[in-house]
Length: 192
Image (cartoon, rainbow, N blue to C red; front, top):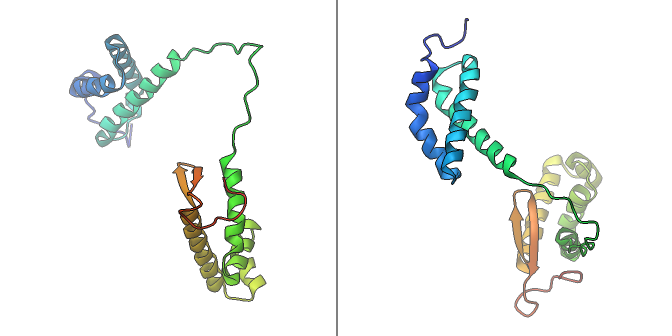
């Protein structure tokens, strides 16, 4: 078949070449010895079935480790047990929505920005206007509008960091804690 790796080692040879390292890889992630062997067998079977689709020798190692990682994830998914929720379970108390609270905290900080940055930042980030529309509304060049928005964001960021300890996760802000009112600047009303 053209374009495929022609001198591919038989699966048994390929497996012997990588089996020991794959075993260590799986054993570091799964404590149960029997499960390690089961996962390795699953990796071998999946690799054997799909070997004809591998296009180059250089990708074989990464391909085998990807199969192993997926098999480990499948192993843990299969172990999950789902129990029915009791009908008499009391309702959870509403969680503190820290992001909404922080948004309320930001309002006085935005209001405290110099007018040139506050207007550009409000139009762009709060009203959602494209920066070209911000430029037209402010009567400045696109470059000038972008500069004002960026400088406004930086000043707002610094004011927020002076006011609160911010916890950032993969998807942005996940929590915050206002600094001690006696030890830091006044963040305005609405914080904490």
